[in-house]
Image (cartoon, rainbow, N blue to C red; front, top):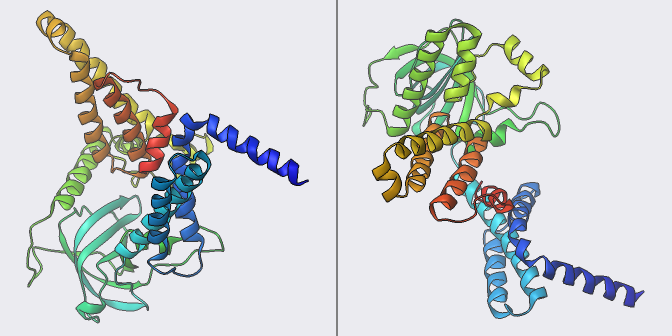
Length: 362
């Protein structure tokens, strides 16, 4: 029996050694394993454990770099420890004040960070929040409040005041269901609630140190205005869908239309991902290259293919920002960007390493 297991172990090591060129593809797997292990724990581990494991594995990699077996095991441990460390640091870095009890009705004042317009109302994410019954040291940095009734045209950067009832983010509705609390925690939102009536717009908040809108608010405002212009120009459900495909804002799509997309199996088309980023990058790449090819002086003298690839990267990046830069959008942009970068560097662009690289970065 012992000889059998020794033989199987040798065969496994040999197989892994023969697959040396594909080890890179397993890096995101072990990185994700480390991240998943952290979130599977029911307690917060000591802060030094994962970094110490990572440092020890890195030292073993350096000292035993000529031993394939030890090197392989050490790399797996190091990448897993890296994932654990990154998840632990992200949790620590995202810490913020979370409301621990229900409050309201009370007066809530804040500057809109994001405004989402739904068919049956508006959802506002407020920053620089002031709550009448709370001190500044107990007030969450971000509060998300739902306004019922006819949608109101609020924009990011506007100051508003309302009567609302707010409380801590809700827990999952059932065991193993979507965890709203965890998602809102990493979004920086410390309280959620609903308003009584509509919100009152304010010119500025008295006592605010800076009433100018920031870059993030300006970008959200621009995206929101673009979405509104698309919906008003096209109108109806078609306008809402067109807005979703361009800016990634699906809030205006009514429940009936969204249900039709889901039932037909086409709901994934509304998520800005590989299809959309690929179309934008492809149109820009081939379009710019075709235009430059019409000028013989450019086509015969300069590397117009590389110029077109660089222009396509910039265009795809801009579209990703307009679409909200969600995780599927980020993944698609990374993969398209790597392919076009390979074109610029005269390297092979299509390989499984694209998937591994995008997964590792995400």
